[in-house]
Image 1 (spheres, rainbow, N blue to C red):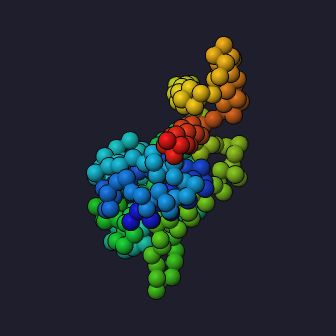
Image 2: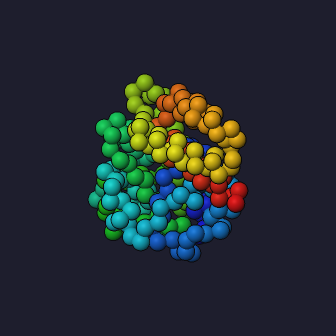
Image 3: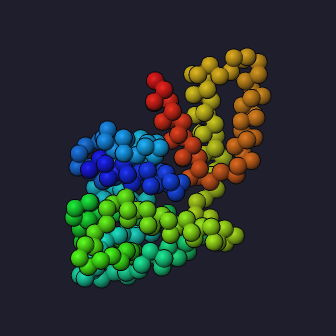
Length: 226
């Protein structure tokens, strides 16, 4: 459902995440209901990557964690959110690419899909009604990640520092939109102003995730302003 995707995007934006991948969305894509539900997380929806199958969606992921309520028949390591986050930290510190895989609202992940995962995270809930809403599950995991980042800021970062190439693409993207908005009303001052903008960005010491988020915001502003 578009609403579930939108609610998930909103949660992701709350915790500074924007790399959303969707496999074969049931109601098609793009989806207006997802945009409406995302509220201030619209940019996450707008830059979401769509894949036709799970294999292509996780092709560049080096450590994949699946979420499921039913672990009875699965020969996988099963951890709660806190323990899983500790493992995520170890892999992030090794510069591995990490993926969190969540299932469909009604049926969750299939056993075949879970087979691709390195481990399983299970959020303990009532036996009477064990299934969480997609966005609720995402929120719990991302909250645990955010706590870990705050308590171990001297040991590792949850995102890698942006490369010069990533920053250059961001600045070029921003410059293009500023040109379109006639921001540089005095052409002679453009070069100096762009240098100031670059200095501002560099003082932030942005991570790759920061750059992607900023580019998503610029794209969303541009789209909604036309």
